[in-house]
Image (cartoon, rainbow, N blue to C red; front, side, top):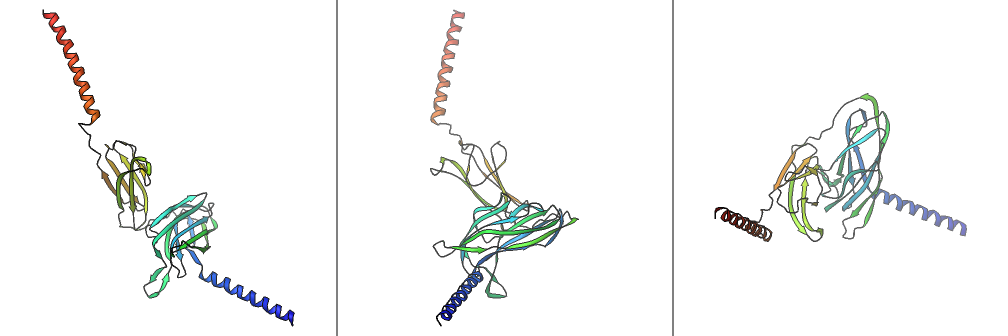
Length: 301
């Protein structure tokens, strides 16, 4: 009897444990990968949407890693213009043959409302990844090291289950270039500031560039006659006198641009330095004039 009782207890604990694990798996958030197609020709560009399914939970942060086969495809760009993320801690970028990202949904995100059933929440887009097929063969794209933070005021970590998709490149040429349709121009706000917490109280350019279509491709700056250069915010200005005109250009992945300029500070004619220079010039001029006058008198006397 005792042995039968022990066996029943062990079975009940095992079943209970399995139920807990299965419930946790059912409630786990997931990064879902949705490709534009599953088979591509060599030279063809395609995209994979990375969507977040929170399983009804409200989250305010997400991070993850996307791995893929470098033998068959290579990474072109990440488009975040339509992302649920409104503040990137680390914009999607390629590091060590993996795409990593980390961002914040400041108002919290629990899913996109289904227009046909408002009670249902659908997965929301985090990023769109654009690739190009380069070699025939089957390959895999998958997520790993993915987490989200619950919008509970405590930053509670919510693990995200991994996701994988299998795709293939056929041995046919298809020189298709993927371009996202976008009639929206970027938005840009810029200003110059000095702050003891930034670059030892030197002049710094701070900007915010947005694009709700394809996302921002790059932001460039030109100071006076200097060359254009790609920058990130905040940016330490080269001309700390602030006399140069600062021109900033933001470009999205549809190659639409917006340009803004900040006028340079005017030169101070009566600054202390300029007054000293003027006085020295006057003194030297008077001295030279005196010498020339004395020489002139000697010659004519």
